[in-house]
Amino acid sequence: MTRTSKRRAKSREWARTQAADPWTKRARNEGYASRAVYKLEEIDKQDRLLKTGAKVLDLGAAPGGWSQYCERKVGETGLVIAVDLLPVNAGCTLIQGDIRDQEVIDQITAALDGDLADLVISDMAPNISGVVVTDEARFEGLLDVITVSLPIFLRPGGKMVVKLFEGRSAHGFRAAMKPLFDRGVVRKPKSSRSNSREFYMVYSGFKPTKAKNHTKTTA
Ligand SMILES: C[S@@+](CC[C@H](N)C(=O)[O-])C[C@H]1O[C@@H](n2cnc3c(N)ncnc32)[C@H](O)[C@@H]1O
Image 1 (cartoon, rainbow, N blue to C red):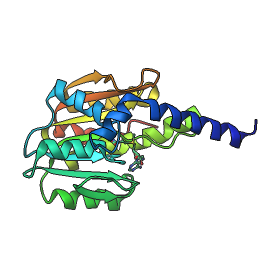
Image 2 (image 1 turned 120 degrees about the horizontal axis):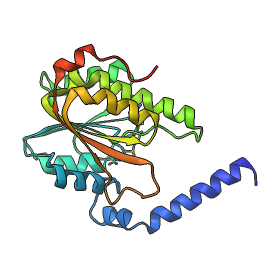
Image 3 (image 1 turned 90 degrees about the vertical axis):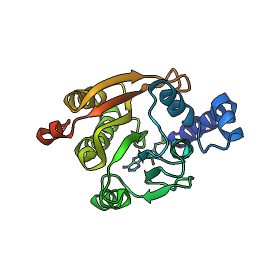
Image 4 (image 1 turned 30 degrees about the horizontal axis):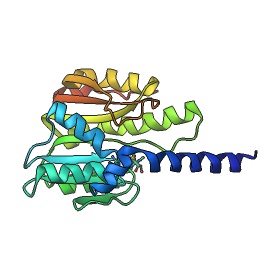
């Protein structure tokens, strides 16, 4: 089997698994753009993240399940800003671009209009190459942007939910976040595939003053 046909077979297998997946079917029936919504819903129920009128920044928002859920929870008086490389299918404020670009950071600041978010959520994941070292480095790059930009986006006392993958990047990020928040807890929602290395960290009580001395999590 050639590399291309192996890749095709893998993607056919993925499509079959997706089609049979009960969370995918439920998302379709309930009008959500992705099955990922049920991960955030479960975390929200447990950790009471989203309130009417809240300001939320959603990083890596496409196709849009998390943003749609947030919009419903924060209502008309709230604000949801969705950022992704790809188009997001939601009715909130949309910023299409790479979070690593200063232009995108500036657009987020403008969308916050002099205010700060109550909650930052990140379900970002880079394209996987299959080469562990490369994938770790790509993911660390995204996590670094979150760490460095937090004081620009998140209000003192604010909360954050972030997807991590077991390994070096998660270890470094968790160590970097420790002094910046009062509390950090691990969550592995039921709809997160059991064979996936992904898990979520839920942080509360952001302490921006501690962020001043922050150094990058990676070399
Ligand atoms: C698992 S998906 C997010 C699913 C989303 N939470 C939902 O509910 O539909 C991960 C997203 O991260 C985005 N992403 C990866 N790298 C990014 C970057 N550098 N800047 C912005 N978005 C990025 C990808 O384009 C992808 O859409």
